[in-house]
Length: 159
Image (tube, rainbow, N blue to C red):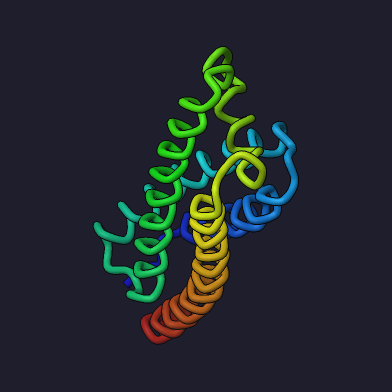
């Protein structure tokens, strides 16, 4: 059994992005939304690589479960973001004029969006934080356990 090497960094990136996305629901800063979006994009790349490694090689179930849960939450958050952007763009077409429009719309979730979108984004952000923390703890625990096991196996084969 091997731990996916990129799982720890993926969980750490999403933990940070989850904290920032929860904070950005209450502060309208377009640059911060753009940076959080780029962080999530990098996190998705790490997440997909970790899932591929976790499926191809036997990986601990707790780490794999956190990876799949994180992927599902990110997909729900992304889908909700697309629907939210379409709803806001229908109300105010000025959000469609330049590349910054979607980020401006996402920065204004608390003022432009209704309570349902706000609660969905808040729930997804808190879920991402939870999966990030659980995943980091599980990945760290399994990495230590598997490295201890490989040390014992290497010592027993030497002697």
